[in-house]
Length: 614
Image (tube, rainbow, N blue to C red; front, side, top):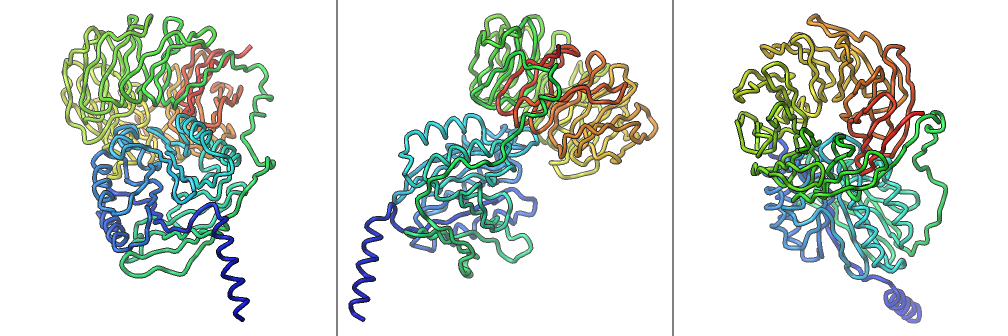
């Protein structure tokens, strides 16, 4: 018996001496949603912080996204205030709720917490995590292009045999449009596991052979208390146990075997571009890959294609061959779609400024500060620039020198879209549930409208309104098309027979309003003061769809983009699809149609293409 015990003792010493890491424990929190309307999210998080502080064996804490409900600066600051109460060091990344409706365009998270990514080594294991968007627009999850580049740089520094654990808010599957980029990189390393949140429940997962674990939300939901996970890393396994703060730790619910991995290049599904073979007449004359996300509609003027990216750089490319002509560096992300007039390019930035650049050289003409991010897109009309920002204001500036002409301060949320001028009014939506009309000359309030929902996420704020015969048409996440009297703001009619979401357009002759539905089809409604049902529908086969890419008619063709990188051209008169071209696998912003044969398409992943048909 003594020999057996000695044998087991020396065997234990042998395996521990040869292990690449030493045992430890950490806490795993996710989906805290600080800012939820009932205040329970903050209470749940404080209870978790206090519970962790009562323990002496937690080495650190990881928090995997959706820290806030709407990414508001006040929510982010409150979350940090609560989390700074943790005694162990914590590592944190944002999720879609921290970026998708954020008044800072998702930039406030990194400013408050110091970064939206992390990498550190603990007891022989490297932990790295990064953001996952989407930013400003509704879309699938997306690891930002600059974060992918960061992963490349950081992983290059690590010995491929070194144990790695990767963290992201989303599961690393097709919930992210570029999941495969993370997977392919992690398979080149000894990746032990991937941890994620997003699903609000505990699940053991598998990501193309890499073990995965989804952690529960910290919210209580229908329970009395919320909760989180304790993770015990041993030499042979990683054990997950759910903890109810102040009450008990449940029996382990998941075990991940920890072993050295040599992943093979198995034949897993990757995005297919085969659709392009069906329309050989459509070609990308040129394609430019930005090093960061692009979330705007590029301007085309003076032989240039001009756009900003999430690193704050404004680039101008040659329309002829896509080569860069000049760049300008703003202080933070540029998600605003540029407007051009008289060789002046105007756009807003998350750094709180509105910029005007010289179109020939990219040099600064003027900039006007607002005190908060400017994610809205400018409209230039006459000698004025009209633009909304995140300081809950809408402005008119002089195009000549950026001087403020008037300001409307009656908003309760940020403006992230493009205003429309109709007669003597400017009409625009904000993420405060409302659509607004103000006097274009003075900025005085005329009317406000909402769709009856008090939920900010249902605001008519992402679409660009279309107007015909004193009727304003909008669509919103409540899945209705609404017709509104342009003079009074009164509701004329609403219909959800086609489940349109945030994409809208109008025919060149003004007879029809177009919408993109959430499943496969585009739809047309006759413009009228009387309630309309869909006049016609066309199945385009794009599948489930929710991105706010507007529909644009040009020279008899209707163009739009989708969440999976496809651009569609439809003949609305013949009611048939003319062509489809896949440029990328991420969201296509509203396209810039130059003619029926040439279209500029930009994707969230930063790919700019000139598509043309022979």
